[in-house]
Amino acid sequence: MNHTQGEYMRLGPDELVECQRLGNERDRFSRSRGIPSQKIAHHKSDLEIHMEGIIGEYAVSRTLGLGGFETISMLGADKRGDIELPTGDFIEVKATGREFNNFLENHTVFQATYGVAVWILPPQASSVLDVMPFVDVGVVGWCDQHLFNIRKHWFGLKKNGDPMPHPTWGMRWFDLEPLDSLRDRLAWIPVNQ
Image (cartoon, one colour):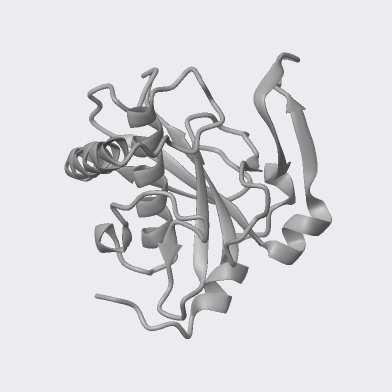
């Protein structure tokens, strides 16, 4: 892969099976409580959104050295964020199945301490639900509340010019900070092994 920003990894079959299991578990938990997924894309099912979220959260945890699957909450979206750090701070992970998509925040206020954008790049597959031998994942970059408020843009139209189902604030992917600077900020946090 030839990318100019972010860090990329390949998730193999065992990791994808675990992501699918956790995605199904999160989807069942959310449906049993009447909690819809926090999706902007209406062409995807809630299960697909939960799967993308699990893949993104796992990739961020692994990339930042925070652990792996044990950092993923089955409670799903928490308005404070997706990954809770030992300090009580949160990371909001925004995962999408398309490269060059932006960090979009569909809550009224960006509440997490940090936000991280993730691109999930399945090999010639239309969905993370397809059976695949691997998935390439790019952990693109990060922002905090301050940077988000300075660099945010209003996204009311899709790239093809159609109106977005839920217009929202977001940061363009190329305005996100490099991951090394977030890794440096988090270096002192004890890791759950």
